[in-house]
Image 1: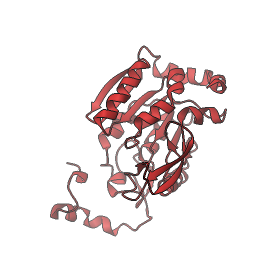
Image 2: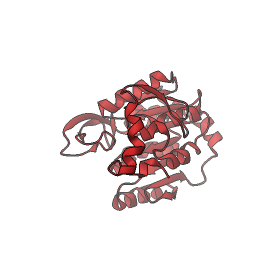
Image 3: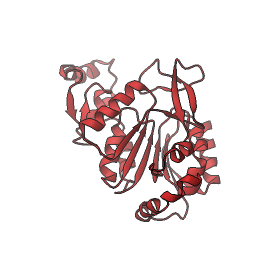
Image 4: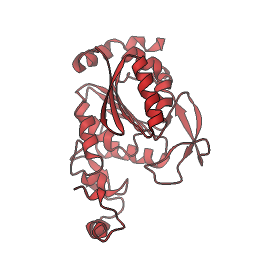
Length: 263
């Protein structure tokens, strides 16, 4: 059983976590399990379960297992970079990971983890992803892992749509795979990336936070020719039907760079 499933308010939970109090804040530790195993991590970037290798281990493996060398990944809602680190190793030096994260505290840890691991294939984009480029209200008063877009949010952050991000600079590479964990903004993100989805058909690993929004996302993806696989009650994997194999997609993505200006 994962220690993460044992509440810290119980006696057993407190006993299990007691040794972790000896880990100094800011200490650099190795990630112990999962796709990012061996990567360097700042101990207080998130809960200790992240670097111990228990946090969302099954989902990490599901996602990383679908990545291939040379692919371009858009990590939307990258938090402090656990999935980014795993993705970086899977796509290798010919691939690239764009990590989108609007909360300055989290973005700073993202950059720190890129620096610690000397990653040349990762770019941190300090912005929320939504339906258009603008300033948006962001609720960040609670846990740093639960921050989200909100009309009554306490902080203003820059935001960008996928379509506008991709057309903003010619050197930016189109996504082959997207992982979206946006605490309710999923439909906004897909809508703001519609042209990118139509043109480049990236596969999508999508976290769902409400059945209503999930249904809207599935309907939109279906209208664009995607098939949807439910990996769990709150996670789906979507692929364009009859799309090319992953290795062919990697090559074709390079070949269509000249199309970016037309987005």
